[in-house]
Length: 366
Ligand SMILES: *[C@@H]1O[C@H](CO)[C@@H](O)[C@H](O)[C@H]1NC(C)=O
Ligand SMILES: *[C@@H]1O[C@H](CO)[C@@H](O)[C@H](O)[C@H]1NC(C)=O
Ligand SMILES: *[C@@H]1O[C@H](CO)[C@@H](O)[C@H](O)[C@H]1NC(C)=O
Image (tube, rainbow, N blue to C red; front, side):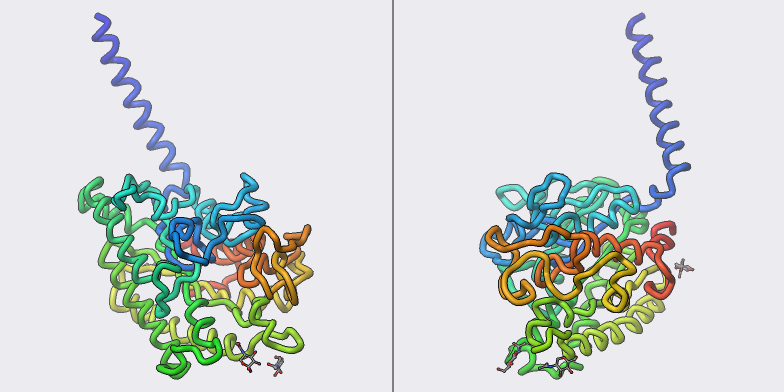
């Protein structure tokens, strides 16, 4: 008798669960994105580099994280959250955990959450490879391949393809390649002309996107590089603290080369949809009219030491500003939390000029 009642109860509970699941999926449009796979550099690293013992590209110490909900440094190069967090919030998902945090002592991949994983690594580049310091984009794609295999095991091949086709693959990369090239006497500048170098960056990125496509990716969010010659560290090279012209010029050249390659990729593989974000334009508009966004300091970093607080990084002995929300830069390379949030707002459903050919909201809803 009790057994019977239990069975009925179980049946009831199961059907209620199903009903809830149905209700949830039909009322919540954010359900259209089941996962986010984040690749890139320090703009979206949420703690991978914490697990690289020899890397100096780290942010897991104060004053980083001072405005994070826990008030603690997490490895994000920010006073608080970064773009990876804000994108996840937009589509109602948790921020994907750092890939390296999922590895066991034996370096085996543990249980990766189905809602996505973050592969990004501070200092990372497309062409530039600094093993032990950061995880190159090529290596990040290798890491994704292991998550992909696990998904296929969990969901079956068809289930995994369906899941991944709806998921977002965001790639934020390129700044470090350009910084490295435009250092005095850089190795890269002895091998390549600037034009060859930015062409190589764009074509390598497309090759890696093709590899991701081969492993289920269909919805890409790709950002161009920002006006990176205007970060405090680069302004330091100019006597009047203006932006470094060559870095900016070749940033636009890289972005201009990438856009038609993305169009071609879509022509070759029509089941790809993507949103390209004009980070350069967004940053340019902010620098032109900072007041519009409540920002009053666009040159000096909030946290650091020396001229423009750009002689020395943000560390526990550095000074930091009390007014983080009116600074463009948190440290000598990275935007404040507020500016990362603004960028995600712009790419998600901001004015049309910032995204090509569709915005991230439209991409998410596919
Ligand atoms: C390159 O060297 C010149 C002259 O030594 C110096 O003025 C300039 O700041 C350096 N630029 C960079 C990017 O280090
Ligand atoms: C500093 O920037 C200004 C404005 O962009 C530029 O005209 C000038 O050549 C730069 N000076 C140096 C030393 O780079
Ligand atoms: C997504 O790609 C498909 C196939 O090319 C296309 O028909 C569709 O219009 C695209 N969606 C958007 C919103 O651009």
